[in-house]
Amino acid sequence: MTLYGPLRGATGTKTVELTLTPGDEEGSESNTPPTVGDVVRAFADRYPRSRDQLLTEDGEIRPSVRVLCDGEKRERSEPASGELSLFPAMRGG
Image (cartoon, rainbow, N blue to C red; front, side):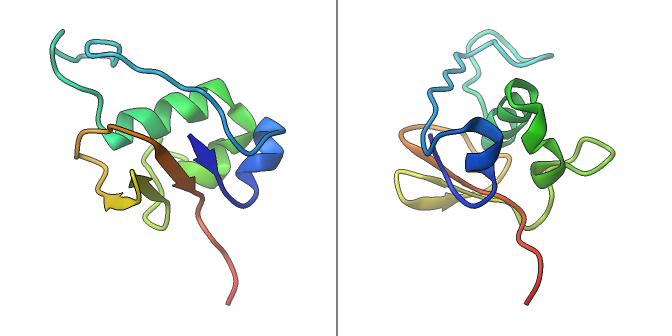
């Protein structure tokens, strides 16, 4: 996974390896592939310093967080596959 913006500070690197296999997500059926939302939440769990940049206080993914899978934008409910790029919530103008 390639990271952008302040997420690099949360991990200390530009890329991280984060592998979820079908069934890793809480409440998931064993053969259902993880969604983009599952990956973002797993990343925030592994790197707690990124949590405020990715999730709201309620644990929902912030609307301005963007995820690309193999260079194409994916919605939170879509399956996550390939090489992911994670862009945190941006502030300012």
